[in-house]
Image 1 (cartoon, one colour):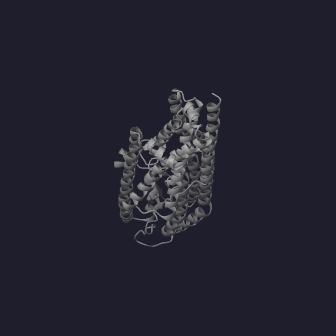
Image 2 (image 1 turned 60 degrees about the vertical axis):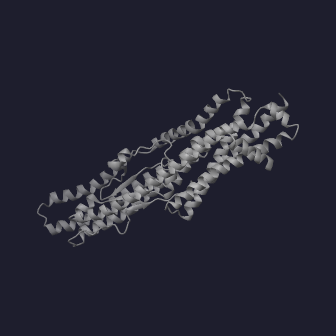
Image 3 (image 1 turned 135 degrees about the horizontal axis):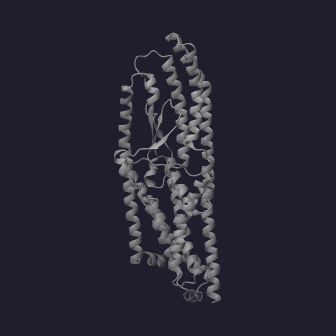
Length: 446
């Protein structure tokens, strides 16, 4: 085994073109980590400005009626791990506004500097080994097995099974070592740059790196299988790019279109907002009709009636509207769960789902954000109605305590992570077995 390790080390790292490609992967990975670190620092600088502005804004509000209309903004803060997955996340820079209006909106801002923040396909660490690492591994998988004639010669020295197993294990050892060292090295470099990761975030990154290495092994073995299927002919390079393009671009795009089509069963968000608005207007109409019938109602009595209708709103219309929003959110969750199950079927589609969730800006991060919005809004509505109709303060008290208007998303692994890992191992084992079986036929039955 040690002889094979030494031999394959020379074959991989002794070739100038291999070193150029590996150097390219290292430099671009480091560059995008640096870019992600800059975005991380920029976000935290802008977060301080955001908190300061929100505190200043409340001082300009005259009364609680205004406060109910204007409300306050809620900012989405991703996990620090997001700097590895800046362009792989589902959400981008999003925020919401908590107010007394019925529509819940999650929006991205394009004002100022954010207008010029365009995101390319490779603008994060996760994209570099996925795109170029997979291409490199396919190519090295092809080069591992020279020809049936050479293998026939080698069988005079050792069994084909032993030679194939040792060659594959030795090459994968060095290649895996490179990508593990790349990931861990950049991870620890980021920590030296002042970014702190929790224990759970470290575990998630290490497990992500494990899946990445297994995914690259999958491509290496697929390269071997493709080479054997075309019987080592030059036409391999045509199939090489077809297989790579299909796995890296076409299948994930088909998966994306599929989930989009499944999402078409969801009701329009505007329709849900309209139903909530109608529910609210029923109560508003009752109040207006009362004032039409009793136009001479004293101001104090009107205030008492407003308080009464506010209590009715909380106990009836508001509960109905909250139920509509919760039902809609659960329907969205079903589509996400279906998308996750479908992604498990192939390693590259699952990789896309995994990086989104590990970033803290994935589909389940969105669900957590919406749940947080609804809980915070429920508290704000009670606070607002109590202060408006029962309080006598001359100044408006801020609802936000400390930094409640910052939603801190957590990085997570998909619920199907281990199933996705096993699926990738299954594909790799199948490719390994099929390659050996075909290779044996070509060597001994030319």
